[in-house]
Amino acid sequence: MPDQGVLLAIDVGGTKTHIACYDPASEQLATRVLATHAEGLLGGPALMRLLEAARECAQQLGATTIRSVAGVFPGVVRGHTLLMAPNTPGFEGLDLHGLIAQGLGTPGVMLDNDVKAGALAEARWGSLQGIDHALYLNLGTGLSAAAIANGQLIRGHNGAAMEIGYMLSPFLDPERVSDWYSHEQGGAPLEELFSGTALNQLAVELLGPGHQALDLFTSQEPRAQQALHVRIAACTAQVANLAIALDVGRIAIGGGLYRQAATLAPLIKHMINRTVPFAPEIVTAHFTHDAPLWGALSMAMDAAGLAFIPEQILSQTELLSTPDATASEG
Image (cartoon, rainbow, N blue to C red; front, top):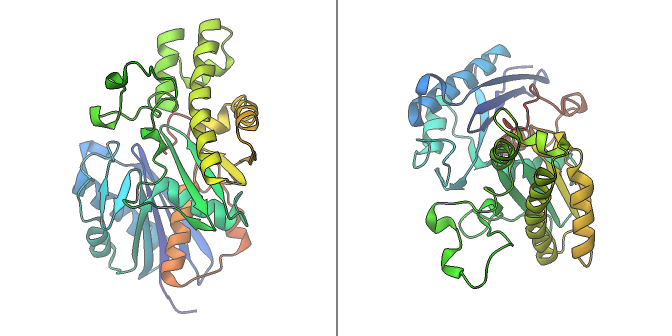
């Protein structure tokens, strides 16, 4: 079969970038993983280095042309640019669409937020198949979510729907409204309360240097247990509010932190069942750590007009090596 071009999926994270290249003609898949900011490169030079790795991935399959490419990023994608992305310094404000199209030689470029892409993968192939009203929650280095209503991904007026890291903590003093910490002060209140990064900091504070987030879940120290449960409750309270507001039937949860902290699942289920009148089903996301990459591949398929991917490709639910909880983006 003649070379009709390959599909490229690029998941740019604050620490690592994951790349997948799929050739519909040979039904072969190649993957790469590399540091997003190697040798101190930021912004445009960092992006050019990632695109070079993407070209090499395509060449690995013997491809001479790229049919379509989808790039997903942490932050808010508006048009051709990226906003609210502190973990990828220098990427904000770049003409991502133009640079990727020029760098890879294809006009078939699609862009999106990484967690929204993860929700697309779960809806197409994973734990949210056939669910018209759902939430996808990613608990990794950061905290983010995506929502599906009437079978469609909710994007919002500015493309920033479900950036729940910016939600306020539910534990606020109503007498001190002026002191509430918010985006205006440069913060992401809920993410700074409950995320892999936040829990890493808490572990060091309560258990000492060298400890990480997962140590909180196994610690018998009363202060650590109490602090952890308060933070889980804070996050779950806001997720419950979203479940009530959107009346979802299922919540799929993924990310390195959720997968590695087995005690999280029953705690979240218990709190949701207590607070939501029509409690949704709580399930583990099908794609453990690489849902955004699969979502990007789904987007590239749509851009190329491709509706089918073989089962043997889909069975590779872990495209790349599994990162730890502190390295999982989202």
